[in-house]
Image 1 (cartoon, rainbow, N blue to C red):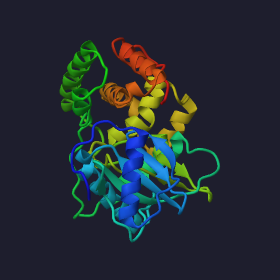
Image 2 (image 1 turned 45 degrees about the vertical axis):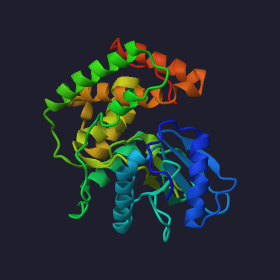
Image 3 (image 1 turned 90 degrees about the horizontal axis):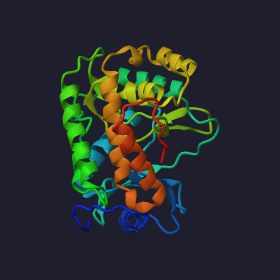
Length: 304
């Protein structure tokens, strides 16, 4: 274990340094690793073995990563279709102020999973009996947003203050919601990007960092409700198929309006962390902030 300080900036070079040090500690060869995904976390595929190394941006996320490891072990134990940890390997290593985990690489092929696949996956996930010894945090829909605002790079005070006011309003709305479904364990970040189709055609679930105890409506809203109502990323027939796959029409639930606006804040502040990484990211952040001030649907945001 090396540094235990909070690491704020998070570039590809930052993640590569953590990768090399963690692989050395785990007895793996981290040379020539290839970046797979750059986002809230950065993922690399090792050149020396079928292994994916996941780098969390800050040691502050250690408890979330340890929870993710526990979730992965539970899902593997019950044979749930999900990504698996690398066996016989240390997990949640702290290197260079980041938290590192090691996963089995999954070869993928065929058509990308759709919204119906995601709805069906959530129904299966929500139906699982949770182990009594697995303690989950209470879901906080805006849990990381304040910290993002506190260390926002190159963002105007006017935008920061607007976001802080919106967060306060949304917390009040969220706390007043009446949920229709029984609460339980939720994925917390259910979107199509967290599904993968293996070469055998089966779909698996990824990314358990936001797992929590909370309203199932949140998973359904991020999976299909908001993409349908807020962005028109799926048409009516696709949405109807997803509703049939899960068995609940989230668009008919009055609280979706509040969850949509919360999700938009989390999507915008996630992007805000990277505004200095390129003019296209800055332009998209400015577009999102402007649209948040005018609640006109559908949103015309670019996925980044």
